[in-house]
Amino acid sequence: MPNALRFICLPILVAMGFPATVSAHTQTGAFQETALLRAPEVVDCTLENGARTKCQKLSMGYLPDGLEIGPFCPATVNDAGGLWEWTGENAGLYRIDGNFLRMLDGLGYRFFDDEGNVYSVDNATERPTVDHACINVSLDESVEITMLLPVQPVMADTPTALGVVSKVGVALDGVPIFSDAPPIQVTGHMPALDTCGGHVDPGGWYHWHGTSTDVATVFKEENISADCALKQDASAQFGYAFDGFPMYGSLEADGSTPVGLDACGGHVGTTTNGKTYHYHSSKDFPNLPACLVGVVAENNFTTTATAGIGAQRAGEDRRNEPPRPNGGPGGMPPGFEDAAKTLGVTPEALLHAMNEAGGPRADLAAAAAALGIDEATLRNALPRPPRP
Image (cartoon, rainbow, N blue to C red; front, side, top):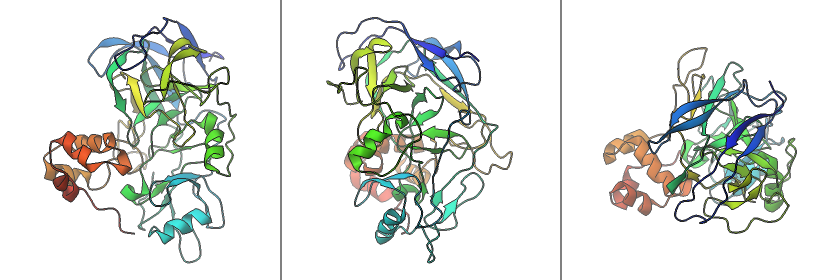
């Protein structure tokens, strides 16, 4: 495998609502040597707007060689595990330790027994038997991941919001990138992130929920005592979004603070890829784009796993969960299928409306309007939060 596996980000056209000028460019972005299982290939693909185009087909494994991951769930309340963004009372990013777990206990979410042992479950092989468990999934070394990125990025008519466990892109180390992990208030459980902001999908492969190469900026901003083993560089490129546009840390290549960022956290400017639209990470977790400005390819993420996001098969090799097209630990939130049936909409439409309206803190009036129903009807149909 060559030392620098690359793909081309070609000229773009800027749509209404975004910067009006941009210089055409052809610049390469290098993946790390351990990123890909085989050299990328250009294939025919279809964008979600129906346009036929060319995509880079990228093949990754369950975990890049040499990438150290963890810790995730602490064994006891006397230990320190990974990270969790709590969205309830006292919201913020926390290290998963005794102080955090006791705070959750005070709010009605008990994750440990009377002896202080943390309830921990491997979601690849078992289901929680308690109301609130820390999820710590084992790896499946056999998994291969296939991703499609447009060779020539195309601006969408309107940006696409990223809700819970939405597909964001791929890091230069070959690790897939996803938006917010599902909240405890929805699933009842905590799929712990490690101190770089990643964890293992039920399918057995590792992925990021943050810009790991700039997570130290978040720790400083949110006063978190933690370290990520990855080299931190706030001005470096982190990866590519699934629309083909590059993603950078919270600073420009010259170390200056980005200006003129749009609602997605991006703008047009000079980068190591030339002058192009690009995204920047924020100083708050999750430090990823809030939306994607470009059009992504259909079926842009598949795996050989028997569970989790992009799974193409189920019920084999001791994996006990079916494919989950809406992804992540918990997949479709519990009760959403019944709620959707009551409302006369598809589960996917309900989840999309809730994500568009704010995800875990959704504006129910906005979600109801998007579905063409009244707020009271939506509120009555939605599943109640898990029992504390």
